[in-house]
Amino acid sequence: MRGRRPIIAATALAAVVAMITAVSTPWNSPSWWALPGLALGLAIAERYRASFIIGRQAFTFGLGDPLLAAGLLLRPGSWLTVAYGVGAALAIGLRSRQPIKLAFNGANFTGSTGLAVGSCVLLGGGLPGAVVGALVFIVVNNSLAAFPVAMVSGRRYRSVLVDIGFMTLLITVGNASVGLLGGWLLAFQPLGLLGLVVPAGLLWWSFHQQSNRAAEARLFAEIARGHETILGTSVDTSAQVVVTAAARVFGGAEVELLLRHPDGPVLYRGDEHSLSTRSRTEPDAFSAGWVLRALAARGPLVGVEGTRPFVSVVLGDVDRPLAVLIIRRPARAGGFTRADVQLAEVLVTQAESWLSVADLTAQADKARGEVEAYRAAGRVLGDIGADTAPALVVLRESADRLSRLANRFDGAHPVTEIVEELHTVERAVAALLGAVSMAQPFQEEPGDGRGAGPEAEWTTTGRLEPADRR
Image (cartoon, rainbow, N blue to C red; front, side, top):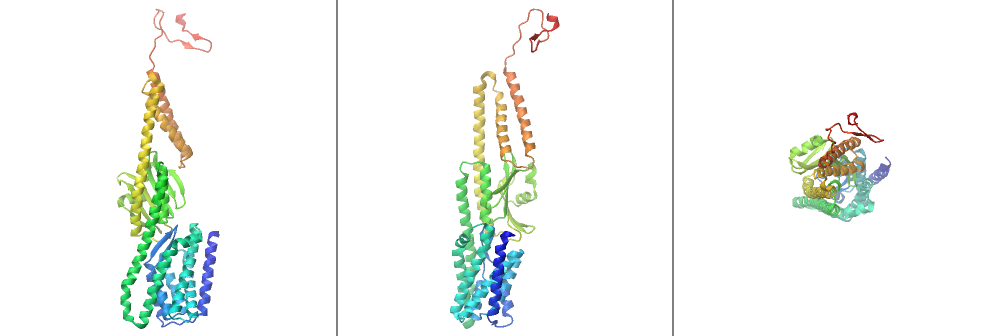
């Protein structure tokens, strides 16, 4: 609740500004159908939008700004404030049911529109007033929208503004230009509006292309960062980098990676900041519901779990997967698009190479360790026997697993796993002792000519001879 207080305060401030501007400016509605028509048009325009994700939050860009710019040029008044607020609430309510997000975005749009209308009316309307009003809306709306993103993602407010600054300026200025031109054509040359169909479509297409390019840039940055981290490390480190990279690229609230580890399946959970948990799972973990759905899809699978959008992919061969990855966004968040699926395929290809190289490195290290163990057995044991080498290899592997279990694994039954490994050590020690005893030559005790008798026993005071040998 403490983290939401600044957002609630900003929501209340924007709502107060909206009410003050709505009361202080004239209504000036052109006709009775203008308000519901504009609200419905805005809701439809905001429905088909492009997104730019920062952390777990997303900036959305649609074609609603041209409608506001046209309204400022034709009939500036408080009816625009009400219509824009209602239309924004409808559009946001269709894609998000979170009360605080709905309230903040509605107040943001309404307050920004109210200030834009007030600025336009103060300057006397016309083209100069509409241009100034559109600029006021751009500055206020995006400045307020960056505030909760900075609060939730943990980034500095100025950093968020810098990240979205150029894209926001480009898209909103383009929107406003189309809206002003459309308003002028509607007032003086209505048939000329047909000429705006293609430019408006190209503008909408450019939104998606720009957001896709931004997502690809983040993906390549994560791949480069992963290469720097992965070189010369283990499968475990590679899996952690894959989880973090996936969360940062897709803004996932939760990322899970089920990895086929040499010591059994391992489940990784994390977000864009770090890995939260790493635990060993049961051998039948690959029979879980979300894993089976991903395997059955034989490719990227997009869907919704309850109210949480997800995308899941398989790393490696489907018949024997190297790992299964699932990315879940927050409840009622925007779903994964076709562009997101394409990015997921690129990330999966790179992740497979990371994990495969790390796995080959681990296998090579293991093979070198086994060879060294055999050599050490030959040098140290000498004539005792080469049969002791397998037992020494088992002991070496058990020592590695015990060290890992004691320090890194946080599964449900770590003590049980350690006890089972100790039983393996016990059997290996017994095998080693057996090999040593079998390798030693059998030496018979020279007899005294009276025939073989029971073997003598040793006591703490001397040798105890059988009675028939006295």
